Image (cartoon, rainbow, N blue to C red; front, side, top):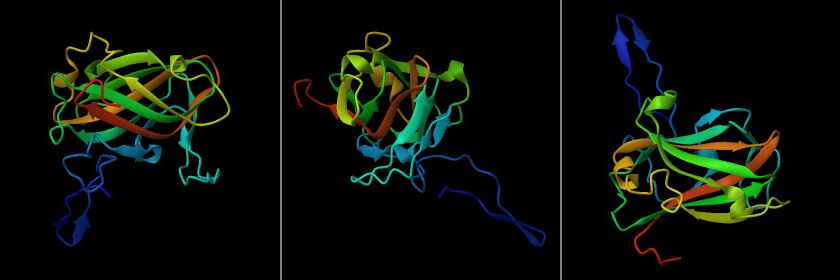
Length: 194
């Protein structure tokens, strides 16, 4: 459900097209620091889709067919509601089934800019397969984005302000790289906290 303005012109009702987002009725955006089912991702480029036929015992239907070049993301998070401090560590947690060596790039951009490659800020890049081996099951993977920051981590706080889209871009060899059920950003106030 997206916010929209309905107007009446003469004797007809006009409902304009609106941007599809993940935020629903949350006009300012979703809370960035909570766990989300992968189905909340409204930005999908590539063959990936939610497989509702798997009927997983945990009730979480995975996004499947994530191949090299696939990009998925959430529009939008409200980083004003829970800002990242200078001494905080930003962590990405994935409930993932890794099928082969996969690199992940985490990006953010302003509203309406997801299609413009030059408007995106890269938060971090890392190889998922250094955190878990490819296998046959879903596993929990937690990665410090500060540790893999594209620019040493100094600008992460500045990149995560206001209402922003969060995108994940996957790269690897040919074929299906991974499947994902959930993701979560964590804002660790103390870098030693688990």
